[in-house]
Length: 425
Ligand code: PMP
Image (cartoon, rainbow, N blue to C red; front, side, top):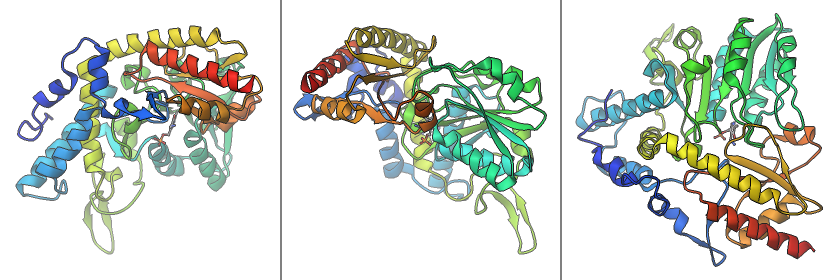
């Protein structure tokens, strides 16, 4: 599938990235929101793990759609509907390429990582998990990769088991083989921890699970924005992510599923688009991936997500990775030099996220004072309460990085933390 030239001139993405070899001023110009002044200070946005800001080409992609070729997809024979369908299909192809899936039919558009996990739990899980079966997750999961499995286990009388973690934020993989038992029906595991930034060796874990015939779902919500993803190399059966953390809009994301698994799965929701024919006696379901996309989908979201993926590609994901690597090392060194600051999560491999606490100062106070310095970070349990419980904390402050952050942003963060310490001195 190619980008419909009549609808989305390829020049647009080039204009947006302007071929700069990671010229920060130019990259930052691509993100209008970053020019903002907050409490009289230039905005330093370090809350990328919650959601990333959008380049102008993503905003433009939605505006152009609604101004120039918007219609409902798949059902129309008129010009606008065909153009719009072509752009929607092209977006699916862009997601396929980004994940290196074998076929575009293996990509299902969903609302985000949360809906993708619920889809797999509700369809694959419901049809394969029974009384006394087990679902295996890890101690590092986001709530969205815990609760849907808990709900499934409750419904079926199955058991949720958990790969434990060390204080460092790394998983105890020696425990994995013992946890992969004859009743394990699925392993659902994060690729990168949103609370601590730990990178999980998913390729090795998939190999070990597959050796026991256990399929694996990988939650890539925090990996896709920062890393090259190759679902065939990882070998996983399902991979999920959200568009909004990867510079795309909110309300759109994708589920990758191996075709033979998707084809064997019952529908998740019923409605238009997911059927081939309907009578009151019987409905014949559509092919994958349409079988899992009931109703009018988030057309604009998918198309704009495609623009976001193009944007990242035009900057060069390898360059982004090198840059963010440098930023993580710089930030780790800078924060380590702050007295009374403790970095939470010291795994050997981390991306995107640094969690920390300051002795005797609540993370919410850190966040509030930093906000007054123009620095946006997050404080709380990061929708990963079991991680906090394991570490004996209720909350951390979390700085998280994106492709537009600079060493100066890290300096502003450290300067802001000095202010916090002064206020509480
Ligand atoms: N998994 C991880 C690791 C996440 O960080 C998040 C978002 N914080 C999610 C899943 C859920 O993503 P969403 O809310 O976009 O569905």
